[in-house]
Image (cartoon, rainbow, N blue to C red):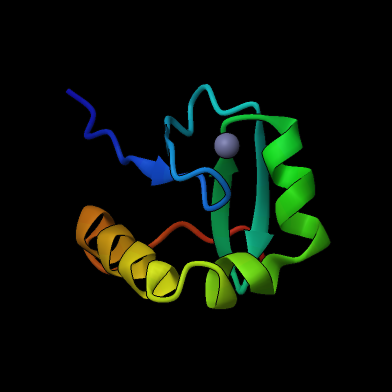
Length: 79
Ligand SMILES: [Zn+2]
């Protein structure tokens, strides 16, 4: 049984299944999945808005959740 990691679409806050996510991108070495291309476009046009300004604390919670789910080894797409 594979352990599913739930990723959160940082734009709309939806849980996204990486296996079926229609869009993904990379930010600060962390893979981010989106529920739709539209959400990815929004994120890529102003990523700092989503990880810093509009959702203060989101990024920290996201990383905490990711670390918990992956045992401290979040998947990386940058290297
Ligand atoms: Zn979305």
